Length: 164
Image (cartoon, rainbow, N blue to C red; front, side):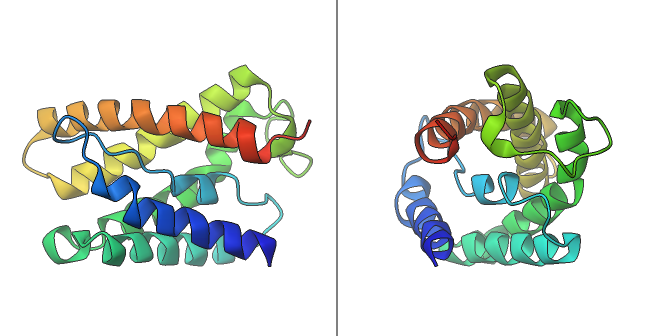
């Protein structure tokens, strides 16, 4: 029950607070991807894909991007969830055996590598589907939004998630 309330809190914070601020006309941090990134490893992959799609759809509907661009958050969240295990293998010391992997014990280097790669991947997909015709603008907005998202994700990880 506690995790459900935490997920709902993150989604509401994203919709009603973070989506209302647009820094320098195009920078918007997306905290909601932390739900997908730190989902337990042992969950069924189909459930993870379903949850990710629903989370993205909630963000699309809540931030009114659904009317303008379609379900871009849902598509990028679904794709991120699909490739999440590949990114985990990048930072896992166990390589392909990720069954023993635990997010609670990532060191700063591995956490940074994981957050940077997944955030840039997610943001590129999100903005690519939003602004198909302008690749330069897509790259610019991807890197600036990813920079601020990574800062927020890292702080959130160390404040709320990492075991002491």
